[in-house]
Image (cartoon, rainbow, N blue to C red; front, side, top):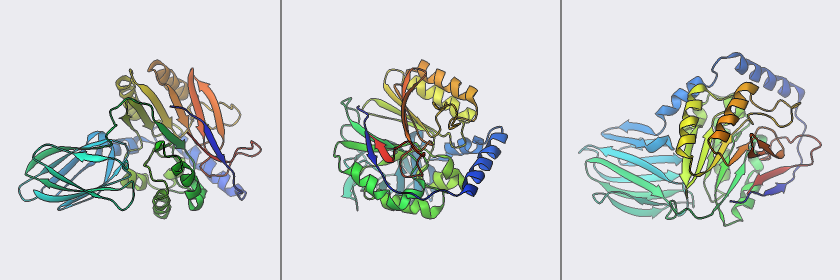
Length: 359
């Protein structure tokens, strides 16, 4: 995969002084807590699991949020280009089901065992795939994936972060990405919103309709201005790994300027699983800010150095970060790294870098 930058500029208003003070207080409060991300990490085990009236759904590795499960209807929001799920139904729940997958690959097809009959109903837009499925009683493994999901051929993705206050106008960035038909999906390092409010998430999803490809993301510190459940209920896990065309993508929740010990354990497992693959690691905060005077990295430099040592030992090929509203290309622990915080939030002054994304 190649990585280049596309830059878009726009005019912004100056942030007020009290906003800076509030952000500083919020981060200071997080730092005072021993494990500020503990509950978020624990809650991720429940993502992708639901039961209702004789039906149970379990999404493998929790790679989708279950938005609705009612008799004969299942709706999910995917966080990976290929998904597997187990649908278990008793005799009363067996029969015709409609399965809707949002944030899906446009060319994804649904496959299952011979006992299951599947009809493709299309969808209202490219990233929504709808299927009618006839399921007998029992447990059935279904897989949604594009036909080349396991073909280790080159492909392109876009990367971006820090939309925040630019939500009303981010559709122009999405349109630029959509104009490149070679981009398979977008990966994001968080800060979709300014305050994590429901109306912001609703606007974000409305803007995604311009994009035409799925948008897989972790969360950032701005999502944590509201309860983390607002992000989790809509999009699922903030720490996860998927593999597409033999390339591993690992996302880690660093929304409070650090990573919970439980997530660090998951990262060790994901590093081992991806040891023989090309591997991209994405998180919101850079573990160590390459500009030492800016303090834009983890709240603990010791934790940041430890993580980078493990990423290097684990053979990670590329690291992608956000949070700092600029573009920086550098190395960390010998691993190529990019900070790309140009999704639309107020940019760093005087650096001459405006809105941008990576390809």
